[in-house]
Length: 325
Image (tube, rainbow, N blue to C red; front, side):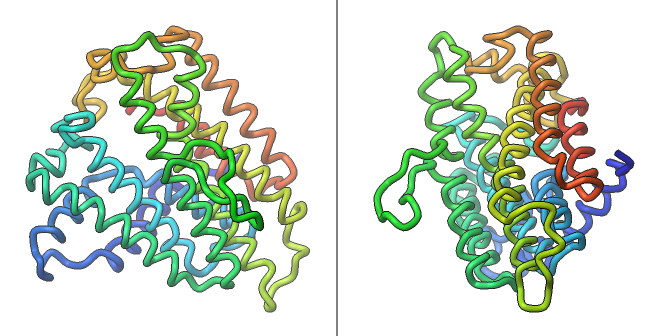
């Protein structure tokens, strides 16, 4: 594995930031307050891990960066930022620091912060709808995306009836809220983590893979680029995302109790102070570290058929568990 993670992070973040700059209305456009709030939180200095994972998944499948990959990654970041704005609100985590800066509601007021989050989510779907990809690929990306950031329940394809799917991000946030003050169990912690954090990481990777497939299966390209069938490609990327996403949140839990607010760029110790269901609270810090490493090994195994094109994804997964903030 030779992919340099620092180069991946730097070049990927630049691509994502350029796309976000193109997509977000300037602060000079009326109404000024909402656009300033949207930009305040979006450009607050995030690592852009989710859009980078999205772009590298697309590149892994297509063996090149498909047209629209940066825009799709930016859409992922718009939704991630919306979720952070709402998560920090007084009614939820009630936090005043995010990425080392005042949270959106602190800087602009609660009402504007709520609307800024709403506007970012709306812009994300507007962006996906305009992707330069086959219509079938865009529809599947919208479906994956909406299920992952909602409650996780939607119609089973072809049946028109609700399916029993993995909880989505909002479903995970609800479970997180309802678990406060209760003794955490292994089952509830894993469900919360897979939904609240893991779902968006997984869908970032899966949707990138779907865009890559759309590129490969278009009239201009040959399917011989694919290491395995289209169905298996997405299945393996999904497993990778689920394993890496859970490992990411486990490490986040560890950092919350081992690092300072200055190191994290957000308020440290919040999970313990609010009795949140976390991995260390159930398993302890040492076992949590071992679990994160084991999950990354499983994530690597899922990418085995892709060979060298999967090296950037593997390097990013290692970064997720080795980071210190």
